[in-house]
Amino acid sequence: MKNGSLWLDTNGCHINAHAGSFLRHNGVWYWYGEHKIAGWEGRLAFVGVHVYSSADFLSWKDEGIALKVNDDPASPICRGCRIERPKVIYCASTGKFVMYFHSTDDKHTIAKCGVAVADSPLGPFEFLYAERPDKECWPLDVTDADKDEESIRRTIERNYIINREHEEAFTVNLLGRDFSGGQMSRDQTLFVDDDDKAYHIYASEQNSTLHISLLSEDYLYHSGIFNRAFHRRWMEAPVIFKRNGIYYLFMSGCTGWYPNAARGAWAENIMGPWHEFGNPCSGYCAENDSNAETTFNCQGACAVNIDGEIYIMLDRWNMENFIDSRYCLLKVKFMDNGCFELPWQESAFDI
Image (cartoon, rainbow, N blue to C red; front, side, top):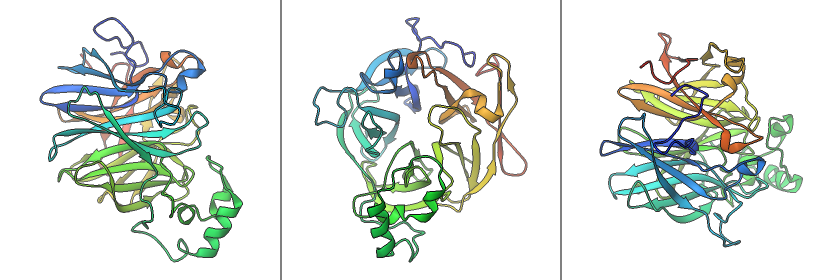
């Protein structure tokens, strides 16, 4: 598993599971991700969510499409839509496998959370709904200014639609604007804590602020309890993990598929406060002349615990031919100051 090279499945085909996640169940690893097609059109979902299985995390068997698109133009998972960053978790209390993903249209305008469920880790997953989360709920850190009706009215009339870092974000009330219809949900991930509580972490408020939402006991819905982190910091691609009681986040800036410098943060409580400490990446990738300033020309997808060690999976996007996008798996190095580092390494494992 050389980082940035073609990672082949047991059929000799490049693994097609991008911006995905890993799940270990009954001793078997499962890898879920976006199935890409060739060219620029590959950014859209024409097939669905792919799943692979492995006993050792090295040899991956193609298990087919866990969530298939359909041809119903009224469906949120119609062919040609966007099904982005699919994450799957297991709910022990129900015995169900639950998938969340960023659900939107080809123009990237809807910003909803899609949810599907299955009885088996291989699927087929049944699509349940796509909606904006935490409708008519205020976050734990809400202020009187957030609830100000005049600022909400002005923001609605302004029709603010900028999705990347912009100073106008400081002059509008995005949280209040979306209170009635639900908060925007774009790049996202899932996390199951030691107490089996599950959380949905997603870019919201036009991508300017990260939301952390507690899910219902069956993991299928949002509980209405959520908090905000990194106000107006413009974070995408959240990757979360936990070690020795401390929560960590690895994120990117909002430049789409173009790489940028990663950002790291830690917290003693998943709801915050979160402490940002800059770019955790270090080192140099000679193969494509990249370094920490572009996250080695990658973007984070998920974290995975392999035999007690934390690794971060990254996507190296190829916008000219999305099906040829590559993967990098880097081992997290924890520092004495409570932060973490992500050094470049040529291969995923030293074997």
